[in-house]
Amino acid sequence: MPYQGEKHAFPTLRHTVDEKHFDLFEIPIKEGRGFKAEEARDHIIVNEAFIKSAEIEDPIGKTVNLQGLSFTRGTIIGVSKNTVFFSSKLSTIPTIYFPGDSKASIFAINVKSSAPEQELIAAIEPVWEECFYPYPLKYKYLDDSFLEAVKKERKIAKISSIGSGIGIFLALFGLLGLVSINIKEKLKRVSISRVLGASSLHIAAMISNRFIIPIALSLTLGISMGVYISLHWLENYPFRISLEWYHLTIASFLILGLAGAIIWSQLRMALNKNPVIYLKED
Image (tube, one colour):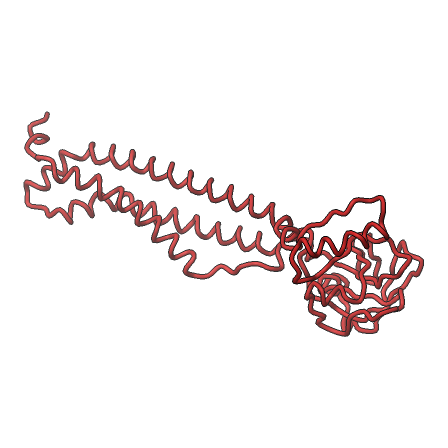
């Protein structure tokens, strides 16, 4: 539902919860307090995203406009941390929590227990049938809900990993063909250099520089674009990893190492061939 403030208007998520909600899910209250039993309905708790979007300073005790409810204004009594529930991105959406009452519709009942599953279900079923018959009892674990919340991101990560692996394989396969063709075209020059006394290291440096420098430049450009895109993408997630220097360093050395191995393998084949064979040509 939309929120209309003095400065800004933006969509919000709205949840009706009881006084045990924040303790049950271990959601920290950064400022103010949580709900008490029989809390007044116009007392609300908002998350950090709401405070940021509304640009409210010293929010505790402030009143905000509420649309679509029996009361039009709510008093902020607490500010909770952003929390992931239904989606890994929803925690960035401004959220308003209202205290529940006996007249409110029940959307879900959350139970925290260390009892075995069979014993817990056996204890809940009679109460459920008494209060909610004929609706069937359906339940799932909170861990499964969290996994569903990040299911899309896990698929993206898997597809990205497979795509990156295929891309690297095709790039290295293309590099192998390019190096092989270029070295074959220079076999006569390599043979002449060897007969004149050039060392294998000098010949290898002469040929490999043609490939190493473009690879290094491409790697620099790719890392720069990758870092920019990754940082921009990660900003959508309040709970995220940070890019460290060693992430880029390991990837760079890995790619340069594979490229160098391909170039050196082709050079060794060229250097091990008899130069007389190519000097007799033409």
